[in-house]
Amino acid sequence: MSTQAVLFDVPGPKARRRILVFNILGALFVLAILGLLINGLAEKDQFEAAKWTPFAEWSTWRYTLLPGLLQTLKAAGVAVVTSIAFGLIFGFGRLSGLAPIRRVCDVVVEFLRAVPVLLMMIFLYQFFAKSTPMEAADAPFYAVVVALTLYNGSVIAELVRSGVFGLPKGQREAGLAIGLTPGQSLRSIEIPQALVAMLPALLGQFVVILKDSALGYIIGYSDLLANAQRLGAGDGNMLPSLLVAAAIFIVINMLLTFTAQRLSRLLGARSGKLLDQEDAVDPEGVAAPVK
Image (spheres, rainbow, N blue to C red):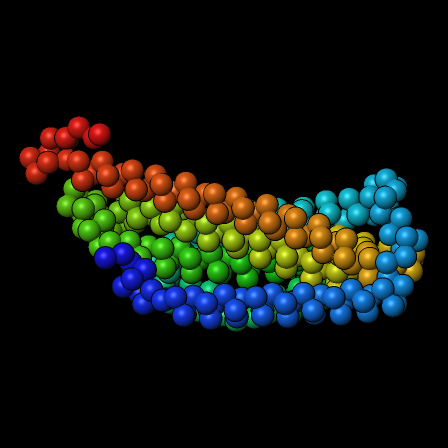
């Protein structure tokens, strides 16, 4: 019996016809909404060639869009590295055998996960710009990076904790059986396996970091969104500028999502091969030939 049959009943001919009808109706509804949207944009002259020709010029990309994209990738790239470091440190802390360390890490992680990223960016921007010797021009970048680090690092810490708890208990028991302490078992056996298991989810979190970096335009960070808005305000083509910026974000996020899916399949296939090799070992520990 397949897993699918256990989870739910296989639809019969009538059910399949109803599903097909609902799918067709849903597709027609979506097409109708898109048609109304396109018609409304056309009535507002948003498809005029003059509004889109600036994006066919290299100067638009060289001086506006590409610099903004580089700033977005810069903030997101730094935030990815610092979020991983933050997540691993507090993930280890939440798994610590010392109750005070575990409780402090729990409070910090749960608090940071509950605070909106935009609120943290605004607060940190005000703090860096007015309460530190930092240059005012640098405050937006550091506010964006630190806010993304605190929020996404707390999410990664939860991924580490849940990844370790999701492992079979036999992993730690095997480590203890060969003389490792609980901390050594955690560092040498459990954490490496949890990191491999959570890698697709971790890449998905990188997508979140990239998208949330666009919130930096509110505090004056010159990222892709801010430059696109500036371009639209100057040329009188705000909507096309935002659509182009959105398309760039979509392409980058699709590439990251594709990478995560490929990595997930690769890890799944590798895990399946390892399980097959384990099944090929006889009770006396002699490996049987795998065909």
